[in-house]
Image 1 (cartoon, rainbow, N blue to C red):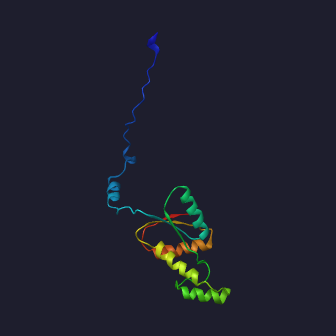
Image 2: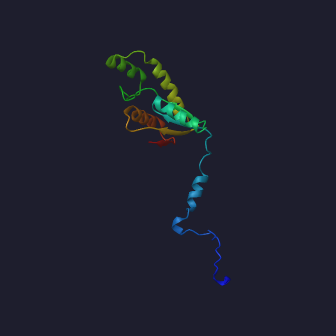
Image 3: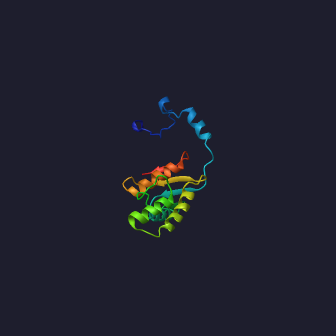
Length: 152
């Protein structure tokens, strides 16, 4: 009567992957040559509203990453060359807006922080927003060959 009982054993999963799925030997060597990972992460956003939302999300996730945002709407006015006085003069003449000096002071701090070399840079942006997209392209141009990560 006990002859018809099947004994099931948990199979071992020591499977060797086919050659096509194996990690190439050069991949581990390339990772070994990378510089040390930076300790701080800087999230770069291109609107104050996005900065507030991202800071809240990071706080809720108990993350201490830095967030920096620009305030200047680069979609308005001349940007080539990137001279603040030319843009300030244009805003006064064309838009009849005065008192934008504080914006440019904030922008100097933004650019200094956003282009720092000792952080891991993660840019958040939307191509559906002209001010964000223009600021992102300006940041990317100023960044040069430094590495970054971009989230669209």
